[in-house]
Image 1 (cartoon, rainbow, N blue to C red):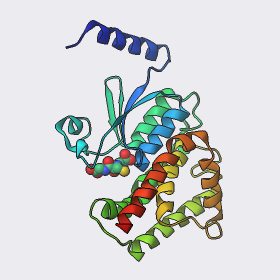
Image 2 (image 1 turned 120 degrees about the vertical axis):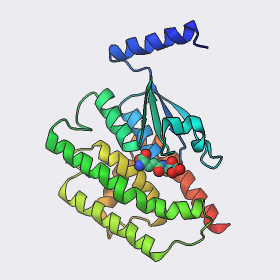
Image 3 (image 1 turned 90 degrees about the vertical axis):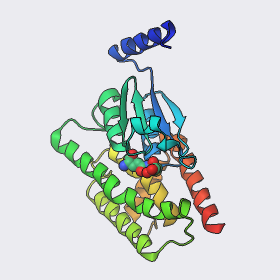
Image 4 (image 1 turned 135 degrees about the horizontal axis):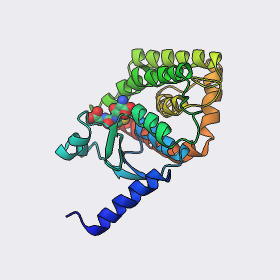
Length: 239
Ligand SMILES: N[C@@H](CCC(=O)N[C@@H](CS)C(=O)NCC(=O)O)C(=O)O
């Protein structure tokens, strides 16, 4: 039942949003998921309080009619901001930056600068993420005990792309940090579980990763999930 207190809460939420204050969002999550971690880091960066709602993929909680209503693609993360629902980590990060960032450095308003950030977000979604999923899905879901050489080669090739980007700009899409770095950071820290980033072969990537891993938002929202993923992969391969 829609009670008075709920109505008061909703009105407060709208009033605070109107005044530029943030009452927080909901994130449907699981800490080990790289796209989830990217959105948690973005919330932290933009000072957006978030409530975590765990979606247990092993228990198929992402396939319930209620969840499919929110996200027909049945993936995590999903963001709920008041009555607005959004899936896909990259779309979520853009929305958070545009709605809550204090300036446009993380997601530039300038069309050409923004295009370069979008380009690297698409790089994350179309190159980096599929290459980690190609390894983790067979191990975690299908019980595979091996990682084929061609998948390792594909990861090394992706590291080469990142190295090339970082030889052109200090960060992945610009000479300053943007949301594209945050997206790539979460995926790269998953990829390096499978193939460590060798400092001699990929010096710029290694230095970039080292610098970003020191950031408080990474320590808080990326490190625990990355460690968990590393442990579970090791366990699955050994069992
Ligand atoms: N492009 C999506 C990928 C999200 C994704 O595939 N998440 C995985 C977990 S890492 C998932 O929810 N898998 C469950 C499924 O595909 O059914 C994003 O960036 O949000």
